Image: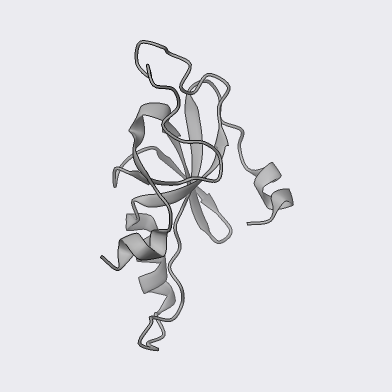
Length: 115
């Protein structure tokens, strides 16, 4: 997603985080072309996403996050299937979720999805 497109997205308030769910490639490694419906369903059901923006109060509670932030902007994260509020955008959706809904950080979503 280009920087200008990111600037148009909502700015998270408080302790919220804006995440772009991972969108699979249109073609599998075996060369099968996936349908638009299949791609859309995998994005909606995805529990992996890219952190786009972090609200000003995210991870500031010292008692709740004694070791500091769980993630930062541009990290790939894992979150619950139903976590956050879904916001439709041109090419899919973004999710606005609370800072404590992040379950983990991964290096590459492609590696995780093929396990």
